[in-house]
Length: 32
Image (cartoon, rainbow, N blue to C red; front, side):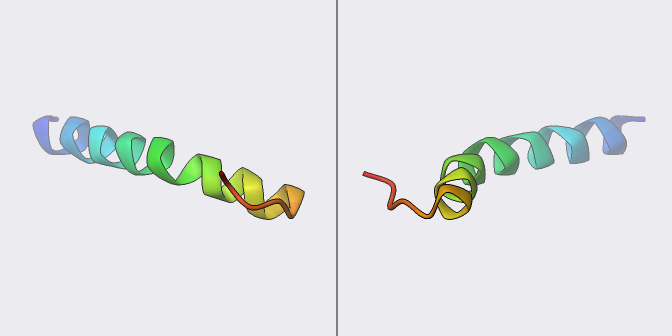
């Protein structure tokens, strides 16, 4: 259970860091 919780936490941090650039690519606008 501890490993799964850690994996979810790391994935969540990665998701939050990459979401803005991902949205910018969809909108075809550079992130400023």
